[in-house]
Length: 383
Image (cartoon, rainbow, N blue to C red; front, side, top):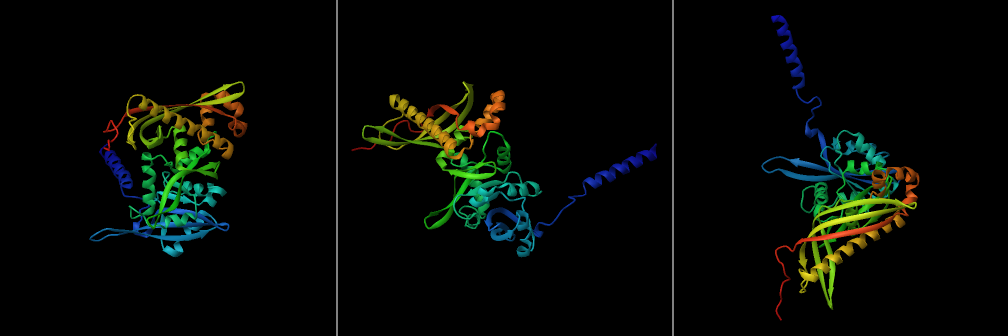
């Protein structure tokens, strides 16, 4: 009995030792080139990939720098592996946060890029994808960063900060692939371009790239992107800006979005689908750009009504544009019908692309002005 216990303890010891002995595929970080992000362009029939490599030098002060390497290959993975000839190390993608796609690559279809990233063990599903609206994607990645040592990480931070602006979507890889595979929904990605600011060339993220299946079909600007986010119930923050008129006086007003909720309510009658879009937004008056008082009484009621009308008009105009120009259901109307009217969806699903163009919309927007910030009246100016 005693001998049996000894053998059992020995067996347990061996099993525990095998589990706690360390990482089975441990490798020194110095043997890899750490990638923060990469860009994908086309050169003739080949892929042209630009990589941002992060170099960390330890010492009295830690110094972080970056360098860029460009590689060409028949496939994405072919271009990745060919960098060994230039870098002398394998690329390591676990710390990559951003992928920039050129317009040409996006128009041809991005399944080859998504396929390699999804199959490889290192890149994370939280990668942020961007589409270069103008010019090569690699040119954007090679610019100097403004607030960070690493441009790819700065672009990632810019996307995460969009909750305060809502002019671009913060879309991660897994979200895009989910949307692309969803019936009754067209996927979108944020767009980036280079701008000149005080003689400095800087990347700017604003607007959205519209996809039909995996191919780019068009772009919308930052304002339309905010409107799209209202319809999709993805607004987390941002500003609503409008002009108020009183006689000959024009006042610019800014409302900060506190919270927002949208409901899509499909109806089916007389072989026709109507989509009711109901939005309710809580705001604070953050700026009264004039001397007229819009912060109380009838003026406040007019302010509320004008902003509600503006939002409703923006929603109607964007839906019409998507139906007529792009034939893309970026709002998820089809998905809403599938969930709430499953029998109807089963009938129309094969012809959804044509049916979508005929969907009528009814928009009801409510703006609740919760407060007027610290000042309850406009700033007074003497004669």
